[in-house]
Amino acid sequence: MTDTSYWKMLKNVEKKEKVRKGMGVKQSIVGEVIVKQMKWYGQVERMTPERFLKQILDWIPEGRKKVG
Image (cartoon, rainbow, N blue to C red; front, side, top):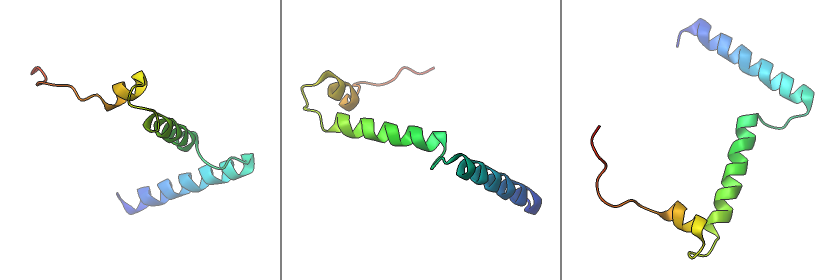
């Protein structure tokens, strides 16, 4: 990364942070999605092994994948 592109990127990050702060938003949309996904994953991990969703999440396919 060149020196000028670094400063441009830093300036964009500062703008985004300023906008978020002005709107009263704690984190970005991507951060919010990640938090929701982790909560869902935690719920599935606490499920009993008999639950279908838990079985699907823990499933490991057998055999080899076809080439191509």
